[in-house]
Length: 176
Length: 123
Image: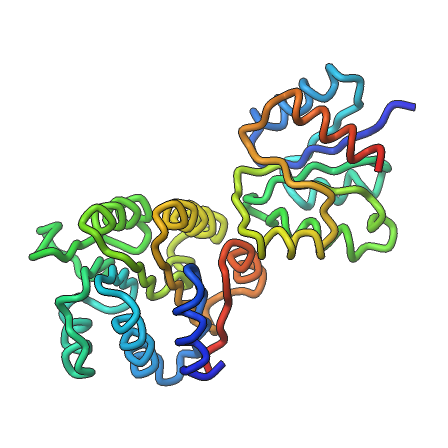
């Protein structure tokens, strides 16, 4: 699916999966984030593969306002749990910590959650645990009428887990 | 003739509750803790209905359902989900296409479970 079609889907649907190849991943993620920053006023960016610092640098380089983002960084090992509004979770394996951080972000008023990438969590945890985590998050976000975008790295996920996750979302977009 | 039901769930407590509730209503109930065990039991014995949990570790409920529907010997077996999962309209449509008869949400009301099982067996 091309970027303009994905943009249309993201405007219309609340819960989406975007399947992305690893080729030009960072570049393509920023294209998507640009779209989301146009659709949403306040976004919670859950990063399982890029440290907060790198992410802020990337947002600035792509002329995307970092102030619109509350970052949950699951990569940087730091003693402090919070820096400004951003939250640090010790590891992508700590899904309870990620869940609590997302809850804090919701309480602070974010209107969209961007998960980069749900497939990375599957490297650290059993597939069924990550699918349950995603399902519980989706259920909560539907009640609150918030958007959620799950990024899936094509090369990192097995088809069965993607098909399971597919049951709970409004649309699956294959990024081309 | 007594109708036979297979309840597939990775949680033992749930398997036991489903068995107790349905047996108290006159059904014969066997249980399986996962998809592989369920398929083995279904190959040995014919069940009138299979109740499947969605979130299971070795094989998800959706995978088990697909395996049943792909198997020429098992594909006519009636299947339903008994799960904590909430599906949007799109998900329910997908499940129907996969061949489920009903989707019962956990926690369930005992009477409701019995009535819906009876309804499915009458279909």
